[in-house]
Image (cartoon, rainbow, N blue to C red):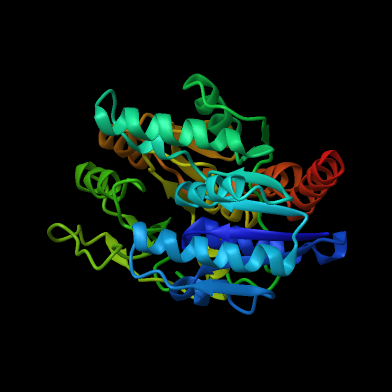
Length: 356
């Protein structure tokens, strides 16, 4: 079976998802990936990679993507085309207009409407656009139960199924001694873009509110699109920059906990990544993330507010966090393995290809 994945962006979780799909050859599934040329480096040595020019997010990039779709579909004759994230919906609509003879799947990786305050014009336009266009796909894959519930709540069209995100098994060679020189500190981790969605401002404000001085937050990430941070950070928040993917495991294995203060998400891959290394997660109660963590067993969750996060941070205990590590690993093995993801996707692909 041949599948063409079409991505208007391949940064962050969308790009990582492509690398997980490419590992499905042992299931008899061969994936091709169409991504922006400047994002190709995020995918490493992935096989069957095709690129298009993306001078910036907008009409020109979409037109370039559609031209490449027009070239690749007749050439590859895929059994299924999968469209990833919001702007790729243009490709789905285009393929339907062209009456291409292949099955189609849409994966939102987090609905665009989740990040828009209603009920203004922008909210109504996005709700109408993605809510209708997603219904053009033969199947919509939601990466979390919360993502599916949001779509149903807004009346989005389409045959929807939930296949939760997953991550590979943890590295057996991960170091756990990165902070050996500061044994008296409580070392927390933030991984991702320093932007509004990820709630980095909520984290920094919470760090300014706490009174204890033994808490350090290590930040693996940077501002997006060349933006700089607004003002100085607390001394206890240390910018480590982007980290090579093969070194991130060391940070997870060494940290006492991961903080995810996001305002909205699909199902952030950093949560199962942390759990796979035995790292408890402190996440906001947004986009259903609280359903991924068992309070007091695999971490904590909090209402989305700096004061609430500060209260969690004030009461963290290293001994208690370390005692959670076996439960975190069990939670990963029970729910978030890549083998489970591949099995569920293979069943779906076979079902769709047989129907069409």
